[in-house]
Image (cartoon, rainbow, N blue to C red; front, side, top):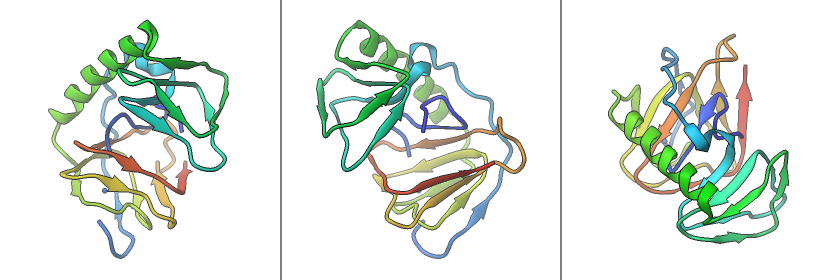
Length: 163
């Protein structure tokens, strides 16, 4: 998943239980600046478990640890250099724009088994995506956007995009 694709992630991210379809209007995207070319951008570290292919830049700053063996296609790896630091500043600016927006839904913990449409999804704690896929549904609009805003981490497994 690209950082600047249909569903943007940053240091941002949802209700356990039965799958729910939440549809909203696609919000206008914030400016991503230098962060736009990053598929993965971590703060203290990035860890890849299993087979991971990243299409776009992979970076970390202010930390410099990249664990595992991610394969970067169409991009480069940046460890706490001027490119990663600028991307973090621009990502922080985009994040501040997003957290000032009204949430489409306030969600908690496990995203597994959910289907979500465009919108701004907020969390009060760390979120995770378990072995049950999260479906990001953009109803016949390949330009629709969804944002996940969390004060903590996102741990992920399966993710499907359906446009």
